[in-house]
Length: 384
Image: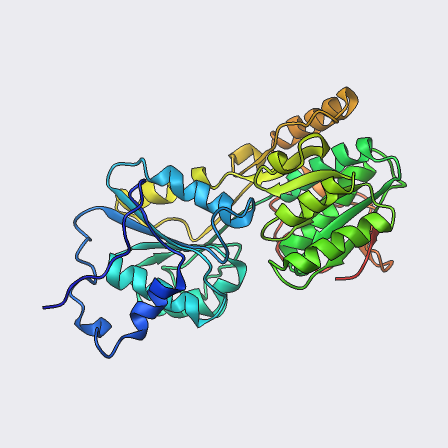
């Protein structure tokens, strides 16, 4: 008789596996003893609670990307008939395929959220084809009609938040030089850098942003080195797009620079140096997906939204933010809340001199072209 192996329950009722000595991947590694084809649990819970799986590339308390998703997952735990299973520290390799298979076959998950960018292609696409009765929704992937119909992607227009960060940063900066620590030059990151610069230039057209790419989503040493290099180069306000802003925020604050946060609220890490931040609000998206599943229908395959939709939000202003900065940022935010706000509008060139948008041209936040951004705007120092 087979015995179902499950991690110990947490106080909130979820089961989190972060210890590699007892990971889902190692459970599946014992396939000779427990063949997935022989397991009786496959979809035994289909008539019972809806089991939802969350997979994180880093720790769920990282003050950043993973924590924001974990906060969204936590919001589901209070919904009757929903069970949440999570695993953190899963690499963007075949490890995530093994974790997805474990959640499906051991836990009976029928809705899975693999949250990291590198999970989508090929891993989510492979698992979606193998498990047609399971719904997979990935954060940031560019789902198309050619992909499996039980897969999909969702994301938020958080460049709106970085634009507002830029407004506040410009008011706080005396050097008129801002710094940006970035992971990889993918469209979402480039849009955030561009948004930060253009928000700042709406206050002062002479402001510049220096960007340093670390090449990895989470690499604490390089993030600290990049932050110090930006400050040594004269930047007096720092922001970032890495998985965990903790190192960037703490390093910048320790050096006396102001900080604009990202992903989640890092104000506790910087206190007086924290200006504001662009945050995710995944709970509204996840609740909508769960409601669809409980109603017996598939969630949308492609979902995007910004500030008006409640997909993103701003951190409270810190004590160093002036009244003038608050008024201007609040006024622009009010315009964004109406929908159709264009960050990219002409005449505008990239930082290599190429025309991005001619006079009279504007790309609203939902413009499909922004999903393929491959440039940095004029005023950003650095290359993608």
